[in-house]
Length: 348
Image (cartoon, rainbow, N blue to C red; front, side, top):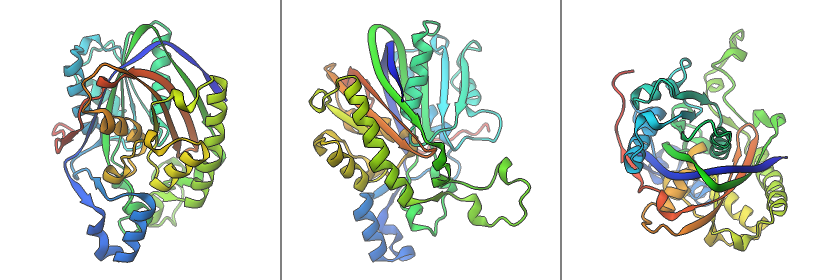
């Protein structure tokens, strides 16, 4: 297990923007039937989701979150050394959407900017990546953007996915801070790559001539994903917590990826964590992929104004298959209130 300590790194702020377009689960009763929708909602916990407008991209939501966060922190564009965007729904096949955002945010040409393709584990991998860049002492400030507009690739007639995913974009500001550290572990199980996949649309399918429309849509093997989540994830978490002597009572919030409510309850039981320590946002936002952890933190802490420190254990898991966790301390006040927006970029 890749694990260790990121030294001299601190989260200075987190912002989240979601579309101001809400879909309630019962609106799909006429599509899937009342009984199916009610059963789905009871199992997953999803009651409503924020869905991007047709014109709205992941970069638009991340842009709104980033601009408000930079304004709050008084970070000038030229003071940011790197911009990392983690998404599975970029604006274009090429170029990287991070380059577009570097331009839109008016960041310096000396700023590093690149995309990373990751889903459910995106935030913990992103914190590790940004933290590593800062721990090297070469960079002082990194802007980590994580978001997805997953509903663009969803089959509207498949209840397993059409009712599950929400859209959003987040921005996290990380800065060099003497004496601050974060503990982490990261894992990958590529043998399960087909468990969550869009089979067609890129190079692997370019020579195939018998592709169907379904091949271009998200396919998910629910039983394989569930088995992975309730076996591999808690096993690795227990090992990580033992390695660094992290007790449940030493953690104020367990920020878990919001896969579904059933899985959150299973993790609570397996890890002996009180559900009161696991904030839930999936009921109002759905499964928001890589941004679900920062979105959940903003949902839980966005109204806080106190600078009181809070201890967090953040854990992401899913598509890849990949998973990991970050243990850190930050001030409660770093989360901005949730941002609701229908903004989109006209220059693309």
